Image (tube, rainbow, N blue to C red; front, side, top):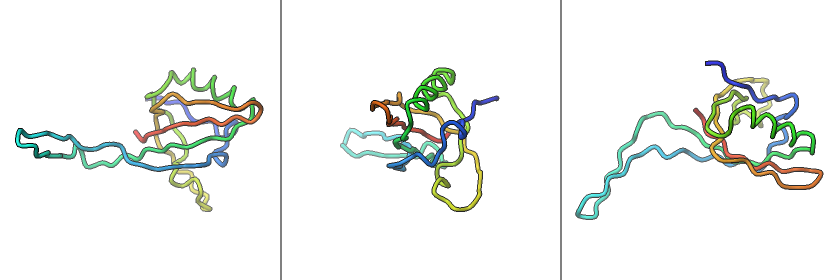
Length: 121
């Protein structure tokens, strides 16, 4: 399938701050009549989830809104550089498929802050 790509020229990834990593829920819990809970993993693949804020100019925020509308909203996969290597000094350009899991919020007047949550696909 042909997925869109994050435009690192218009929206450079070095403007990401407050990056928090967590994991997607990977278990199915069953409650017994006795009160005991039994949890079973859905699969063995652990998917990371990232929430962060992106510092953007007014023009970058407008471009992001256009890109997000063209993407088709949340839960549509797109390619981006692996967020685990974002602070790496190595010239590694490993790509990862992500999806936006919640509607991004944009606040600010001239300098905008875009709060997003991405999950690995």
